[in-house]
Image (cartoon, rainbow, N blue to C red; front, top):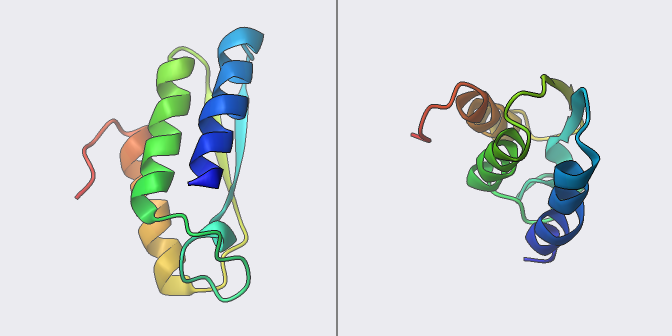
Length: 93
């Protein structure tokens, strides 16, 4: 909940107001719930939601996603799938 609040109350307002020419996401899946090291409680669905929120905040701004972090291969794959679906404007499965 704290992560979601920080994203909504800090990151999104900056993105809305700054109007970047490019958004680079360092997609650290070590924050995912169940990760061996980070485990900040983020679900794959939350990664989907955060990615969609960025796309909606700046729909014409190119986005680059760089994978980093994540020490549970299966969990990282699930999170990346959700990020990819969000980028493709596909509903989560």
